[in-house]
Image (cartoon, rainbow over all chains, first blue to last red; front, top):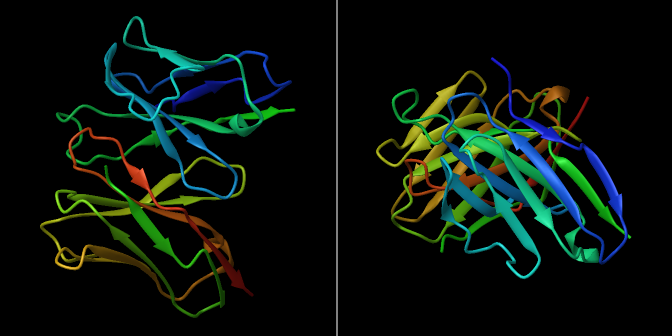
Length: 117
Length: 112
């Protein structure tokens, strides 16, 4: 089975520029998460989707970050304008529906590494 | 919201020794506690998890223990090998499809 796909793998931008990251979850996984992982820290949840609806975006800096999952499959995370402190790896993850798994295991993509200069 | 603290931040052991990583959580309603291993430049991958109705779980050289009263859980790795070197993250959630709250990570170095 194909894993969680993310692109681009690496992105370097200057502060105040914009950037977008794309994620395609494992087929059949209705729940999708975006996490931010700053170097040397654990992943921090930015937003969680269930199908195309937002479950939790309480930690998303909404003045500059936005995310969508219009058709309930792939998702885009956008940052505009970027700040130096946004330099991090942006991890997308998905989880299977309860009928396939009774655990809360997350399946992560390889991540998109953002460097803001 | 949930807060997860993890110790130590770095751990160096000799090959063959045991390693123990400890985490505490704040929300007594949390009931799912996974551990993820992340190798350099790679994605986090689940290595073992435990639910709140179980006190201990083992999988070969890896075990996790949970003390719900004290709100802490630990990862135990026995007979460590160089390929165990990685960053380990604990996490907690309310279960179901709720998002995980991760600890800050422990960098384990196994010296050959």
